[in-house]
Length: 320
Image 1 (cartoon, rainbow, N blue to C red):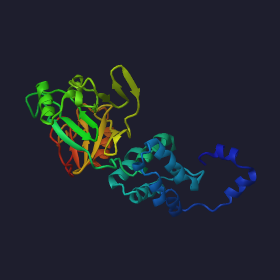
Image 2 (image 1 turned 90 degrees about the vertical axis):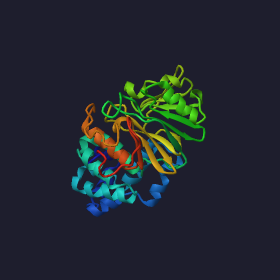
Image 3 (image 1 turned 180 degrees about the vertical axis):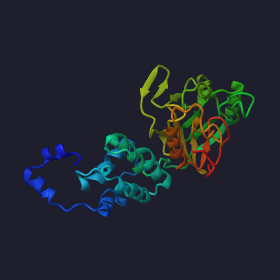
Image 4 (image 1 turned 60 degrees about the vertical axis):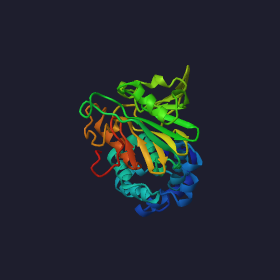
């Protein structure tokens, strides 16, 4: 039994004997015990500003206390029934339930990694809680197969005092970025933050234009001589703008999610170069990891801004 050594320290022999006398938990009861109630969901609502690690801690306690000493990874068939039920109760799309089975059905040896995935599943949705951000495409990118060379799709996202540029990478001339900002009434020093989806030169080449901004990547925030370490996963600029970790094209990929009046817009870097993929990224670090991250973005995005193409609305034909 999972946690047996701990149980023996916590309970007397008499108490352990009483616990052993309980009837075996049925599959239906197990599902019920490990499914958060509506009150549980409301309590850990991300809209209250709790970090993902806090949501994880509370949900693990809420979902597992009734089944103390039980480990859902011990019952593969029951787990296959459990997580889709959890997904249904939390209004999570079927893709995310399938994602669990495809990537984490590996028994107790992978328990720690599974808990991180459970945290994402139980956090209800990666989507920002707000819908008041706005965005503009400063430059539409291309690759050698679709344009005269290589250029990044450079974007501008704003809400309140946040003025964010995403992936100021290669362009034909810096004036492409500067003129687009000027059309919005902005100068480079007006930009408060720059988000780098990953560290490939074609996506970051012109980051130096924004000397006053905070620079964000997968592990830290940089400004001047200051380096503040933090995990990008779950980082929120505002109720409508947040970051999630989406490795696959590279190990450090992140996606900026913006809640707008048009829905959730995902600035996904090179998870997709353009609307048609490529389906098989020739430089991916791991095809399955890329597929997992694409699935995570597709579960919430109404519009995807790729690394080297125009924004697109995902469809059934969008490469997974």
